[in-house]
Image 1 (cartoon, rainbow over the protein chains, first blue to last red):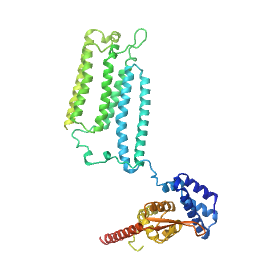
Image 2 (image 1 turned 45 degrees about the horizontal axis):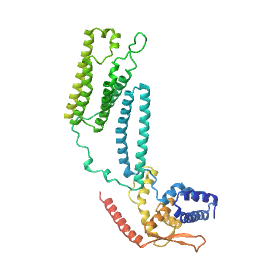
Image 3 (image 1 turned 90 degrees about the vertical axis):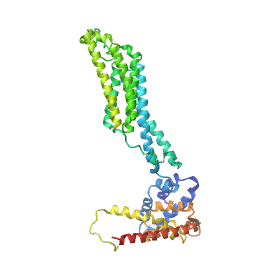
Image 4 (image 1 turned 135 degrees about the horizontal axis):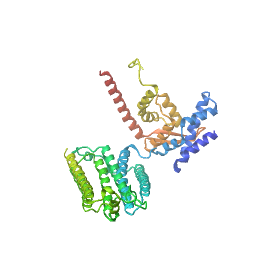
Length: 314
Length: 120
């Protein structure tokens, strides 16, 4: 009793079944379907309805075929899923910010404008995320299929993070600092071409000495980029440690010392800028400004570094 | 059902079905091994399981029979004599041994549960 619906159903099921088993499965499945239809017809149903009911209760032919082939029906199973999620999270949170920050810094040094830096950062970030997610998922799906269990990934008591020794690093704080750093970097880069002050011919007069871009400003940008990475690392750690406090101090120093030095030796500001701005002119007020700025930078740096150690001590 | 009478329940029929299904799921293998001590074929087995109160779908049972054969718990043979060729499964020696162990364990569990129920 070969009906079109049954033929189509069996055909659909066999499509994804391994070649070797097809003939046997086909014969058995047809016999079972025919038996079931026969039973319903004997109980009073008409042939067409009976066939429809039987096939409907057998369900999705792809699922049936998966059952025959022993396919798992998922990409990454419960055993591997948590490791997969952790691994992916770690990879994304470390690789993406670092690579994007480095690229942005390099772009800034080679003099691109802020618009293109921003655009490139976004597109690089997105590409990176897509690649990382794709390749990680692929590797884990393969591991699932081949039944690999990486002993290195098995959890053991040794993997428990040590008891927090310092104050916790809060997400809000980290985000605020990251945003502040990014804005700082952007402002620095933008200051090259944008300024509140214009000269007689209407061109913007950069606040800072253009000579700064030969070395110091790229250096400072790099330090800021590293500070950004440091913030991420600190957040991942979850709490302050002596090491983190020391690195914090080092980074602060790397930034502050050159800035103070440049301020005090009158190298930071653009002479043209000083010319244009009245209240900056005249050595007395000019000196006052630079002195105040230097003191502020020094104070903030010291306070932040000390605070770091204080938090590590908790 | 003569056990405890509950005046009202907060779970609905679907939840009850789910729990019952979960409860019965463990018995399918044992039931099959026991029934197939006499050779049987796909649909016939399905009917017998239904009659025995073991609730299993056709699309779970048929692949399962092949799996059990692959594991050596069942043997199979095509019967081409009758009007319709049918594949007959029968419990192998390994299958019988396993069924016996599973049965012992099942009865043990039943007794433990009964004891638990008696304790207040």
